[in-house]
Length: 334
Ligand code: A2P
Image (cartoon, rainbow, N blue to C red):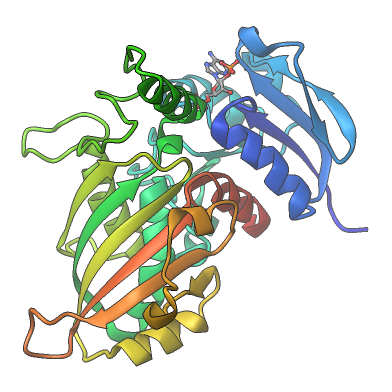
């Protein structure tokens, strides 16, 4: 008989936690026992897993006895607070928060990019920033073939990046604006309905946001290129749950759009959607609830006189490849 695992989801009621539950079921992950953990506010609520009702429990330091794999998506503070309890219980923590991503003893993994790094774990494996994971699924195969030299990203990030409350705020605010009612932004710094906000996470001294620097630092770590020149501008847009990114890539070797399409078509986790004449290109509504990252608008960068630059556009489900799916894929690697 194949091995089965006792799995816990910490933050099971959140936007990502709910998708983790669905992804475990959809991918037939060999779950023996499942524990759903959240705050005291949710204790006693229920969810369904493989047709059975599971009661949500309040997470406490004792929650991890007998657990093999703990999928965490309850925010950085909770991850920091619970790391010791999880590791002491002998479980492996797969953490969706940013708490440990840049720690030297914590592998940061996208299975299509650097699966080999999982083996170096000491009880904690980090799931990357959602926008970074989506980007690297598309960029890593090109990097392996032609060696990336520089990367400039502009992102178009959905409300789901701010969790269930972000999605609820976009829907509610859209209704309020259409009805001429007053609005009160909470999950975002400004109104998000019929707007966009070039500000995700806090600003740093160099004028970049923390979100933008996650793209820089986490990409360098996962590609094993500590000095790779990368820059990013991250923008929140009123899409519900898939993130999109405009990418300008410079390589060490020549690469044509046809070559890039051929490489990407053969890469796991990627779907090439690139037929502008038929109006086919990646869009957040099409990436929603898909496991694959959509890649299109692939073209030679005309600002250069050589063939070493490419432009492309990607869309990926922030809650799936950007979070829940990637975490479950890491569990599968284990
Ligand atoms: P709860 O629903 O009980 O507040 P999101 O990112 O969508 O906002 O979700 C955050 C997740 O983290 C939710 O499942 C939330 O549970 C959970 N959470 C928040 N605070 C705690 C806590 N102190 N202990 C356990 N889980 C928590």
